Image 1 (cartoon, helix red, strand yellow):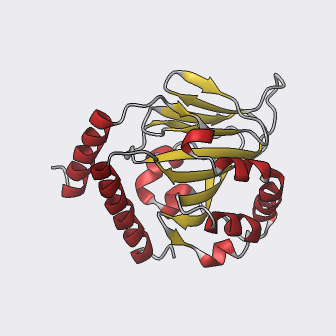
Image 2: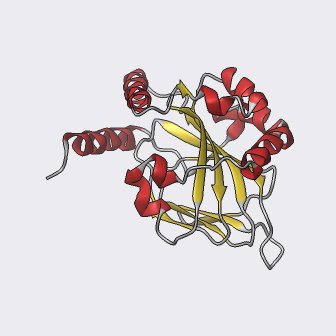
Length: 227
């Protein structure tokens, strides 16, 4: 039997899907203008991310942080590791202390709800899936993207029928409620900054609902000890 949470999630998803109709990829300048600030500083952010990767301190796998995500994180024996800096409005001070420049930038962007450094192991595949909540958008800034054998960026995002190959320093704003999957078709780790940002220009009732949902998830994150 479906849990109350699952039923509520489906009802919220249907409500958003009926009211918000935007394409899989959105314009950064109009939908998340602060994205340009992260893009302009990508090399500094890359330096902090590479220091995390090269540190002796372990970075947890995604399914070790969120066991419910094992079906997309623990499928092939290769690692998808996540270094969390912010989880639905809840700061993680110990992790932020290791990325002072990025954390200072995040503090000036209140519409960023979650922030993660994502480390995708060589030949890792994230199976096709869809995000649950259209009230947020996903901003992706690739920081370190090795090349595949054909000389193109080795990291591939398949999104709603289209393939996106972003190189180092390239960005994309996209709606993760569309079906998507990811490959790292290279011999090195792909490093990316992933931000969940509040969707702008929503009707008032959906904006209030979105605020309630994200606040609730943030409280759960705090209860689970993320902050």
